[in-house]
Image 1 (spheres, rainbow, N blue to C red):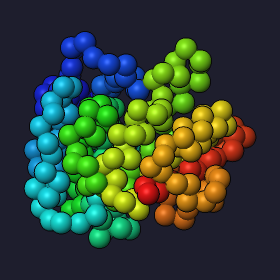
Image 2 (cartoon, rainbow, N blue to C red):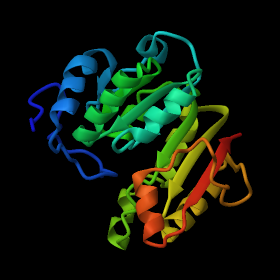
Image 3 (cartoon, rainbow, N blue to C red):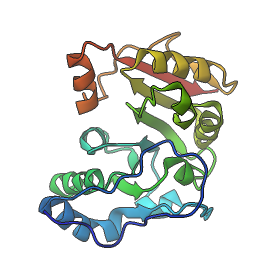
Length: 235
């Protein structure tokens, strides 16, 4: 086992409430090797407070519809969706360094050219993306922050949703999934309350075939929890 010693930015400045637990963790040799080889070409460090606009055409080297994957975990879902959807570009953002290493390894092993990987706060990244630049935003099984005093840390809240919606093109989709019923209800209320979004299914969406089953989803199913998909479109 090895520990990453450079390349990923750590932030110690005072900042707004985070929607995640900051984690670095340990990388396996496989992950570290993939990071060393691919991060310089495919990686993007998100620095809190940086508002430099990101040129997505320059980042990916082509013009194509773009998908933002928030909190991709170990990256299996992002890699699978990108492999099955070569016509769109996938920008994944995560704070867990072993997950970043694993996604880079999967990208390298599959020879994917339509994935870029960001390390840092997703909302800080979103603030640097041009309005209307995304075809879709995915947030699959974000931290539910179940305790009431932590609800302010949830990703799906009005200010964040408004920002994400602004980055979607008209007709673009915001797709969330959770296995926490109370969070699903809160998500639906928040998304329904955004005047720029419309519920694509008139309620919880049927589980789409294009979303691979995640480890978090399997864990929820084994625990007897129902899975909720919410898909909304920008007006």
